[in-house]
Structure formats: C-alpha cells, structure tokens
Length: 470
Image (cartoon, rainbow, N blue to C red; front, side, top):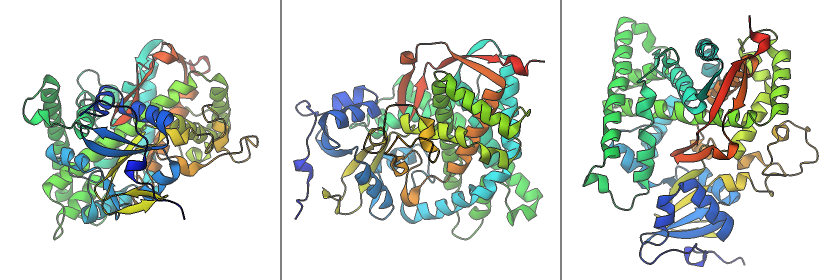
C-alpha cells in the first residue's frame, strides 16, 4: 500500500528563522522563485511564509487533478477574492460557488465560438488600425508590449461593451496607463503577510487607488451608454449584442446582478481581456524576431491562405492558419503568461497520494511541467512543428494536457476562442506587412510577473515590408 504524503513529509528550500521563505519569495519575481524551488528542491515541496505553510507543486498530474476538482473541492486562494472585493471587483474571475456559476453562464454564452466568429468585423477593423498606426511608425523602435495592450484593449471594449475607445489612433494618457498600475499592486497584496496599505498608504498605493477611480469612471461610461441604448431599443433585451448588454438584461431580472456585480464583471473582462492576450502576442513577437525560418513558414502559409490581402478577412481564413496557431501554442508552452495559480482546499483531500488539508493553499507552478522532458521532448527548444500532427515524428513526448495557460476543468477560461482569433489576426497582419528587428539583446528582455507574466524592455524596430510598399 502506497504511503500518503503529508505536508510534513515534503522537502523545503532553506529559509530564515520566523519569516521562513518570505524574503526570497517577496523580493523576487514570484513565478521565477517558485520555478527555481521546484527545479532545485522537488516537484512538490512546502514553503513557510512568516509561519504560514503552503504547498508548491510543479507536478503536472497533481496540478491537473486540483483544477478538475474545482469548484467543489478547491477555490482560488481566499486572499485573491478578499483583495479584489476590497477594491470593488466582484466578477467571474474571483467569484466562487453559486455566485461563480451564475456569472460563468453569462460569460460563456457571450464568448462561445459562434459569437466569437461574429466578432470578425470588429477584429478586422481594429487590426487595420494597428496596421495603419505601424505604417506611420515605420522605421521606428516601439515597445511591443505597450502596443499590444492598445490593440487588445480596443478589441475588448468593442466586443464586450460595444464601446469604441480607439486607443490605437490616440496618443498620450490612455486607459492603459491606469490599467498598468492595477495588477502589480493586487499581486503584491495577495501574498503580503501584513496588510500595510490599510495602515499607511505608499506612493504606489495612492497611484493604484487613483487608477481604480479613473477606470471605474471609465467603465461607468460603458454602462451608462449601454443602458441608454437598451432603453432606446427594447428589442435588444431579447437578443443582447454584447456581454455588457447581457449583464444589464440579467440585472433587471428578479434576483439579478447588483450594480457592483455588473461593474465588477466589466472590470474583470477589461483587465483579463487585454492583459493575457496582449502579453502572449508580445512573447510571440519576441520569438519571431529570433527565428527567421519560422517567420518564413508563417508568411508562406499566409500566401496560401490570404493571398494578396493585407490581413485575414474571414473566419475560414483564420481557421486555416494552422502553423500560425502552432507558433502561438509553442510560445504559450515556453512563456506561459499565467505561470502561477493559487488554489485552496475546501475540504480534506488526497490527490496523487498527497494529503491536502482543508484550508491549505497549493501554489501551482505551471511552467516547469510545460518544459519537462517527460511531457515534451526537447522541452527547452522552440519547435512550433510539435503542434502539427505527424510533423515531428522524432519528438516522442507530447502532452497538450499539461498546458494550463487557460486553466483546466470547469473553470477553463471562456475567452480562449477569442484569444486565438486575436493572436492569429494580429500575427498574420504583422508578418504580412512588416519586418521586425529586435533592438535589444534577447537576454535583456525580462520576465515580469504582475498577476500575469509579461516581457519588459521588448523594443522592436518595425519596418514596412518592401513587397507592401506602394
């Protein structure tokens, strides 16, 4: 009979008296610290943060079972919801139990594949704006991550809220400047053992609170305009045209959403919709700048699929971009923008012989299993072909179930279809129309974890391709 492994049986990294592993965990990029510990100490280990014990897991099977056990046996670490509710965010991301099931139904319906395919004209319009913006900037060096934030914010606000913010054709103080201040502070507060911000507010705390006020006012404009539209066109209540309209229709029903829940869901979609996708596109560009053969293969695919068009114009074309999608999958494997997930047990459970007591939190490190040779042959190599059936017969190990960028189980991210549409549309347009040159040493592009993981200092020179010049 296999022995049950308790938290006392798990190895631990060296720590300090009283504070334990808090200093190293708090001072560095948390995803990188967890990755280092898993590689050095073991795939499942325990850490102590100022006396509180946590399990850290880089074990693919254990992580997968935990995610599949939601929402009945596990929930997100309680402080995530506590911190987000404290700042007024009550939405799908941090909701739990029956509240989550209600929010989930609305979001899933709004982002199902059929609806996402109907968003194509909006995707095309916004991508064309990005193309025109870069045409004007040809020859310049840009911060790719900030450019992609503009792109995904414009898509999210158009599709989810029916509001054309159009940051791509504006400069200066745009909503992204406020959004950038949100996640780093939330991330810091979630793992802070002492809530100092409730006692003394730092300069960053004040900037964070000002950003929240600005975004809330910004979001309220969406809501007010949508309410006016529904009042003017009551027939929309039977067939809402976007996520926000669906929320407002639901609010009118008996026991419907509160004003805070409407605001929180809009806030959540805005944050999640722009952050994860923009960061993934940015990492894709990081790899494309270093892999000319991959660029050539995507361009060959584009010639076959869209011909002389400057960007895809149909859902069928997007679906046919198989190699482009494989590139996106490979980048998400190597640079997952959600490298950490924190899950708390709602009851005593034993999974993969590991005993997890009620209330215990498991910090799941997702990159380690995604770059484990047991899961993927040549795990550290950038090989998009591994995602094309029969394209790499020499790569024996290939386990797509290990990829957790969109989560897994019942709380699998409902925005996956939209994210892939955005990624393929953006990369297709960029490579069809522009040459990209990385203007910094690849080693100087740093991973920064601020709730999601993004590339800092990704400076790229964009030049209009000779074949596209008129």
